[in-house]
Length: 325
Image (cartoon, rainbow, N blue to C red):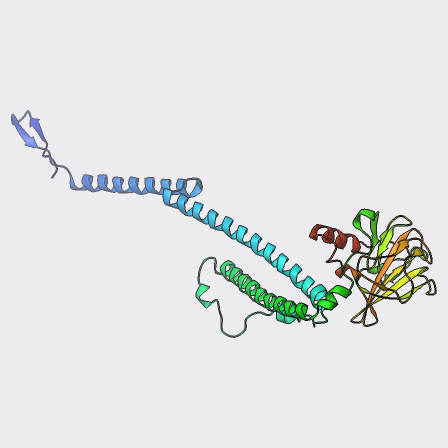
């Protein structure tokens, strides 16, 4: 209730009540409302144009969102790492383990198959980050399925290994020249430049650059089927039949340490590095045959190289360079 105000009227020598005009009251009220509206509008403009002005709740939400994005990025990187590791295991499984045991490679569509039928991610739809969440779940589900497929494959390989101990003892499994004797991995299996014609030509083996006289080792148990220079381009060379349709070849030797018909074991010295035949420098040209077909020897060094040495060998063997023969 507002206070009543009076004034002294000198004409009547008495106090009279001050009466406020109705229009004046309305004007004052209107000015007050307009002033409040303008002040609020100005404050709103200031708030909208100064992004750094955030409420404590907004700051907390922002920190939570930034932390979620960071955690998502970390999870994505871990997924990439795990996908890369599993891919490498799958490649070694198909190109090494299953190849060793004569087992069929796992079809690519089986390894990478998705999930058909109903929408497995319907409950994740309708959120601000649904697309990101669904994609992450798809990657995790796919990775899980690939792990199951790979686990079953390794179980199969383990069973084959128990049945084929003899195979493991005979097939080529070590590098024919020790790393300590190597100058370098000169050339790998694949399209390379011919040192004589300078034209691109398929190179069916691996060239190991080493000094003349460096020992050359049998890569697996077997019987020497050839130790001569009667094959075009190879010069002095040795061939070993390992059984199970595997044959290894060692070319450009300076001299032999075995004779035809001799039984050898993995690690036996069968000859010495040279530069005989079609060769431009001392080195060993090494090939592996399976069922009469030449295959990439790089998958047959599991018995003599560490993982680091194997990776270095892979990098060197993939270089597109000039061969030594």
